[in-house]
Image (cartoon, rainbow, N blue to C red; front, side):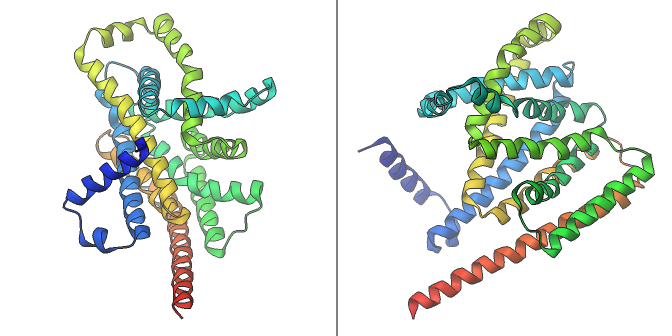
Length: 337
């Protein structure tokens, strides 16, 4: 019996012993997959929320130092995970297929964007940019819609056009109010879509791309710690608390990425897209409550317009999902007849 067969038997036996709701045991395989995907999506978004507040518990390490340690911890945990489950060779084989320097350079092109986003994610909450960064994540799906229209020729529905219009009005309102717009907001919503589009054009999976990004950065991270932040090395190595916290940082980071990728593969695109709004909502709440980042009452108008845009996107997703379910129901009726 193969390892995968044994794993399936073990999982089936384990699941049968759990006190699961009736819909899990009586529903179809498609319904169970949908439920599991939703659960994984919620878990991944909650984990990202926890990670957003993580920097505040690691003082006196700066946001940049926490970012450096996080990248190293993620690399160690990811390598350990791939070695244990035997998946490392599969990703290495994909990379070996790159024969030329041009192909290698093309592969590394999105890496600086990835690193800058992870740095901002750890730096912003403890430097007064938590709310602005969370707003960038709110705008990210809207920008993906725009990028899809521009680069892939995707047609926008009326609700999608309305969502983009509300977002543009919200950003414009914020610019008029403050005579500027946060660079953190612009960086998240303006460059993160480019990372995903480049990886999509390259045909590189999320885990393979993550492995490349972390492996390339690891030597630079180690050099930075010993050359520019030796005090942080002393703080971490001299404290069991920091060692445990950084190990937890790596485990939570990889677990958040893994559950997010698994959810994206189990859920319909529209459902996954709607679930993705949970993360920025959590980041926004944490930035104001736990981290104490400022939120002015005048920001309600500009941010309210952006949230109206998000509501339009969610409504578009719900409408499409209903259409898919209706089509599936009609096909079942035809087969029955």
